[in-house]
Image 1 (cartoon, helix red, strand yellow):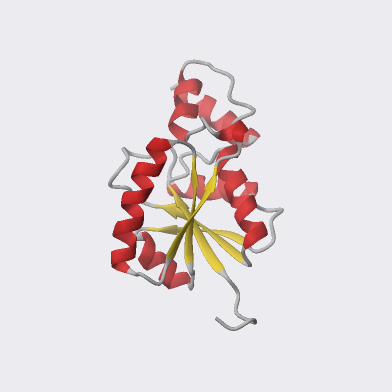
Image 2: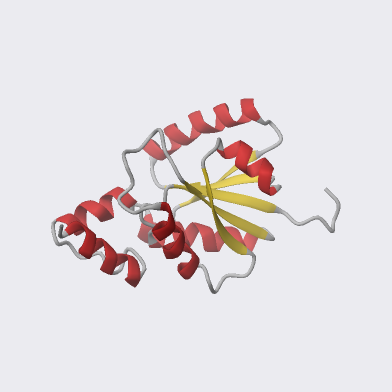
Length: 166
């Protein structure tokens, strides 16, 4: 890499919905790299059907990252390493909360390195206030009327409560 080359990374996830923990990792990655592509999974083998469609998830993210220079969101429906290559990324950046995250991410890292050993995986430890936070946990809290306004952007909290009242 020459000194004039931009360092591009991807932060992949389903973001169903985006949480303040996700935003913390994205903001921290934006301080470390020239360009961060928030890669939004349009379909997932690992997880059940998304509560929010791809367009709404993209909208939540775009509005939440609007103040960040060098950060953009893009949907993808391929292997994350293929998407990373497509956008010219040199690394996949993920947040780690707990040992369970580590076990899953270690496996994904090994599989991704087999696909493209040139694309690194970089892990940022969750900030303490977000070490317990997950999209599924937020959805469960919202389902039963729990307090979520400090866990997700305001717009997401409103939409979750509307969607889960049905």
